[in-house]
Length: 522
Image 1: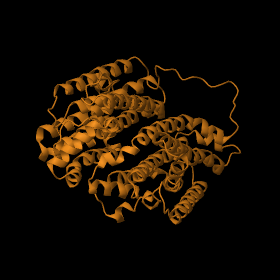
Image 2: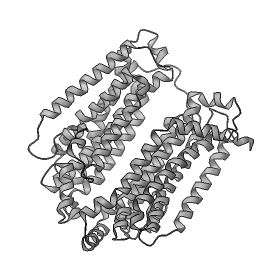
Image 3: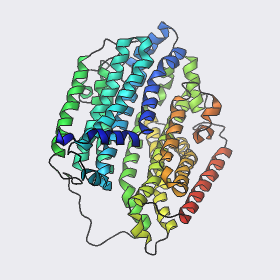
Image 4: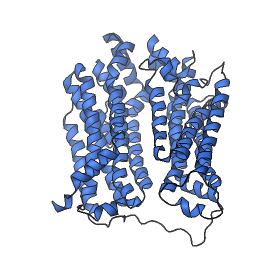
């Protein structure tokens, strides 16, 4: 038991540090699923309408690749189909972030070495991180069960365990990644890459096989969550497969952790060249962020190709259901359903691009708090030049990844490129506004800089599920994306675009002015 000494203390510390993030992740994921019965019942209020929807979705390979097959036309079965896959992905993302944050990130900053100097066992840090991930997944599962119990307790329990179990699978994937590399960012990238591959395998398998029993689907942990078949004749034995994966990966992670020193890794860090080739602060910032930019750009291009190929089937997706058509028009803003679908996808990519922009801005905050910025600023390099070097990948990079999304949508749709590329670039003022909020927080209140993630996440939640829940327009207007013209389509109003661009510039200028006046944070 000495190897686990201090586990309770470290777990309490992890839960205290994530006292806002863990409840928020659980509420967003669990609340998304729990809201499903109300929204779907309003759209498909009769058994005949639900049966028609299930039949059309089963016959649509694009929809199967996105959501998976429909295993039941009951209200609970449609909720599991519509929200189950995305809830599993959200749980996986939350889990890998939590585990890497409390393992490799602690080692990278040197805090784990200080903690390990006390009465802390070798396995305590990893155990506490996995317990923190278990907390967020258990809370998410409980919210799902509570929200869907009225549709049938067995199905609700199956879906809750499938979502929470998928989260734990990727928590242990992240635990393995944290042993392999010295960088927290690379550990998150490895775990995120595995998650992306799992989603792609499931999408490819389900698009070609409506039964859900494709070999590719069974190779994916995300596919396992769907094959639990909540409300569709539950396959409880699939949960044993999820539990086995968690157990095996946990054992491997503990085995690797026992064979390395604190701060060390199994993948050696490649040394840089003997002579430097970077020409300035901007080149250094671009070098630090080029991997993230390439990953986001590739993901947006591939995602655009997938969603673009679904555009012509938008009418088939909603059929003759006027309420479903109204939701697409609220999100996309156009009477023509294909244009509304494309506008909705462009808006979704814009909201996701804001996450990249905020992350790129806060990379500069990480350079400051880690102490790496201080040696640079001790010389002739000024703060504004240094900060501008990091803001350039945030602002220009968000334009590049949106262009990649627009190109993918237009290629997948097969229409003219100009309108869709223009629609993608029209999202930039809102993206830059959220980047400006992050810049202002970093410059003026650096300890609250992480709240920039909260602003971007709130806008994503409002834009994603707000129209489906029929939230008041006043609440939807909190997001800058609600004020943008809904393109492609006619009748665009460019006044809000100019206003948001000016607001983004003002927020960024205020953040840089505050950064120039304050002391560095260490």
